[in-house]
Image (cartoon, rainbow, N blue to C red; front, side, top):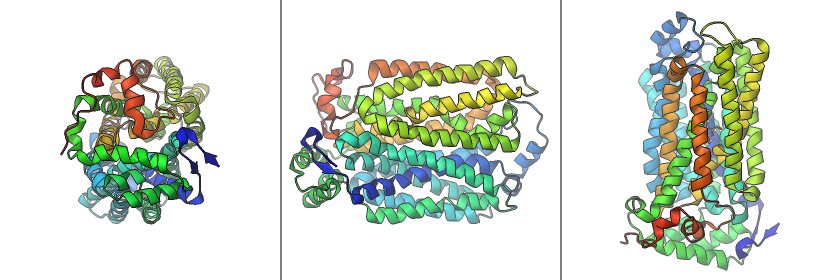
Length: 498
Ligand code: BGC
């Protein structure tokens, strides 16, 4: 297939397809981790070995639908990974710009392999925690480098779809983790070791993959390797005539090369629009409440009255819905655009959350269970919620921040997206069960209110980035937007030069 959008020619070759898929394994590492932790911390063997007091408390917990699993220490174990990733993303941004996207992806996989090895063989709590930290650094490096890598090597007319491969692999990772936990939960006493150790599988694939994939042309040219950059561009476009696109990368890299302090430049007025959008997209992504479902689906389903096994099965169903709905986004994001998907999803997520809240409020007290039919309705509503997240805020939370920064602040700016994601994932992981305990059904109204706010944000503040070449975003998107153009009025792009 040859495309000539923006006069840039390209063919999708087997090599470029391999690059997309191999890099996307970075998403699988992240997703596996999101999915695995909740199950592992629920395993008795694991609790007895590392958190005996928590296990004691679990045995004698007072039966209350909303407060069964509220335990700060255990939640801290789960969420410590996200704190490590938060800090690591800034180091990853440096690695990404100074060494390149490819070596940063390689480092991510190495950290992850080390984390899996330590966690799977841990005999002491501190080794286990060290393993968590290594996993976290791996996630920080992978989530920084992979979305930027995919966005930079994608042809403009397929950029959304290619970037969303990252999110697709996140969802596959979550689903695989749920299935693995299902299998290992009956392997006594070392099931948890298998669950944590198997994280090495995607990491090894990513490690090998990172040796095979190309460096991105933008990163090569930015680091002064012009000839290599042009050769890489020819290779990923599958055609010889890449002059028009190469010229644009060259112009973008001239500015980038002169900017010595990307983080300081990110604080300039002209950098505010993409920076605000990057942070807000990620914060809102988490305030949809998605990770309340992803981390705690089995707990949630037990809360509404399913037995342990049935609730795990329901979690697998939501996992499948999550994977399959991501394809909707892959096939529509470059046609419908980003804004339409986000807005449609706000409506669907709002209705789903309000309905779940309403059912729980009127039909589930502190004790007792929902009747079977209402339980099923709740599962269906969770599915309609997950479905709309999966074709909107899930993938676009990563896509939009990776495509809106100019080259000179791209990796530094994207680090803020990654760290905001990690910070708010941490907060949700840490406080959700306590919030559920205190707010009960009202927690779903809390998330619904945020969904309203994010809908308004899209209407008024989010520009459409579909089909705009990545190096023309400032001119074609930010300087044209009714609100954001003010940031450029008398300060076209006054970056601090070396
Ligand atoms: C989010 C994760 C979430 C996942 C669900 C990702 O985009 O960053 O926090 O668990 O989507 O599929």
